[in-house]
Length: 429
Ligand code: KE4
Image (cartoon, rainbow, N blue to C red; front, side, top):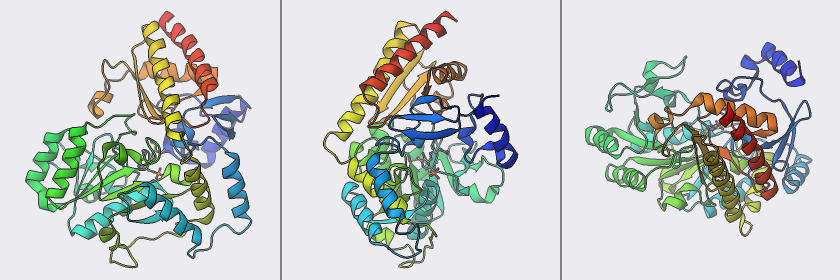
């Protein structure tokens, strides 16, 4: 067995499934997950010392490239002053100001340690502010693993969700409605039926957890107008899209101001840091000011804040997003051209530095049902063939991919050269 296999067998003795987050176990693609020893720029190295051009990027945080020297220097220096104090620090004010400066809809912000905490807290806040219980999410969107969000659609459009995870009592999801993404009629029907009982709508303003799926302009505008009409809270879950699709996040591309925004990934630069924020009148309900409780031992951790501040500084450099978008587009357009050349049924799309590749579809997906038609078998062959060449995509057909500032023309061209060989072999197979 090679080192990855040995480590995986060992890990499984002590850690459920051998991993600390399920998607890392390669369940969707089979095979042996790569145990990463180190990372630098656009690449990661596994414990067999094999290098890979990395398009997972820690699921989004590594936007400036892995182990960026300025981030590492800042974090190393901060660590010498202590790791955590359980008391307020000046750095937390600095990063709060940066987030408020960069995300216009955010007037006040609370730091937490994960996207799950951010969305769980934002939903509790929306319920506390409105005094209502019902929440709406969309099929295929993932907002972390808090109980009321681990839910699958009810039998009918107007029926409440049922748990899609063990350990979640039916009671915990009976206030959650799950609707099809991009379905304006479903939204109108539900608000007609339940309008004044709905606390919030939470949405990924570009979906990334059923692969990249773009919302229609009409869908986003409907969400904004109908929540305003019924005094419900609109929550943009920008844990993935925040600072990823544009400096101002998806809300700047849609030109829509949500009432609350959740963020994560990029704002921690790879360290455990996330946040929720929005209208000051809503945020005033959060303890210790208001009666909606929320807390965290490591919230606003000084080392994570240092990594986040340096990352937010680097992404504000002139041309950062133009370059990021250009490189992601080179990748997706290059893959599309090569797939066409070898008659491989692949579509590719990107928004800023976030991209999707779809096998077996004849048009870009609009919702979860579309994504269900993807050719998972072909994706699996592609994934492993590319992995063997030294290119690591997300190990699931239902995940978006990420490009960093370190993915320069050389890395994109090498990726495309390797993809051409893989497509040629797939065509011949
Ligand atoms: P975390 O609790 O994993 O920090 O964030 C949850 C979350 C919330 N909202 C959105 C839009 C997200 O994409 C996520 C987490 N994304 C996944 C990637 N599909 C994290 C990877 C994983 O679960 O290991």
